Length: 379
Image (cartoon, rainbow, N blue to C red; front, side):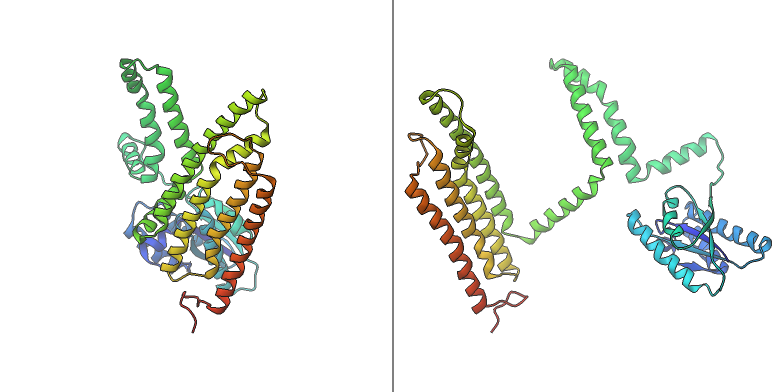
């Protein structure tokens, strides 16, 4: 049995006409083609459907075996999901064919994009041929102008073609303006080249979807009134201050070490200076952000007692790192608390006990005062 399979990868048929797919049988395919032509006469999938009917009629006259025609559609947007959707519809078509013969397919498409689904079709039914429908157009100025107008009306095409072209056309005006301010033209060319390169990478890697999703999530967080917005901003500020403090302490330590011993600072002491200068601020950032997260979980009825472990864990780790880094730093530095061996042992013990006791405390609290999935205390 021969199956004439009309492929519409982006589901123009379903979206524009409301037809349920797959469409099986000559009469149904013809109805779908007429409906799509009425809804959008410029859609190339109209020609695919009519070509499928034409091939069906020719095979019905020339071949001795059974012939059937069907139209399958995918999904708009994602090629992977579209291919899976077409595979499922092909399974539906094959299941509806009441024949004892083996089925072979002739695939009708309107371009290379739709032909990307051929491996999916071939995994289900042998393919005897592929026919691409190319519409003949008048090759004159009016036709070319109309085609360009239609292509540039597409938002995705505009972003892909016009933005790089616009950047390139702005090179000369930017260089001219820069010359009035004594800015070297090479600097301007470098900046424009960098912008064009970033844009090309952005489009090539498909990052526009990820950026749109991130903006949408940020908007939802902002409108939801979450406490974490404030705490994350405060934590970021604390991290910046901690970074500056770490660099400052590293410079002071390096200068004092050079005066006392001469030479450069050992890597271990360098790491200890960075940790000692920043750990207080980093711990404050961690506690602030974790408290904001715990508050949001409580406000959204998702609170668990074990969530309160986070601030204590951060404090315990900070205490251990602060004492350990202070043990390796030389005495006499401003803002540095030198730690003796006994004090280091005490700090390690306190840090360990703080983590263990907080874990046990909130585990007992959760067992005695459990919360339901909605965050309400169970009675």
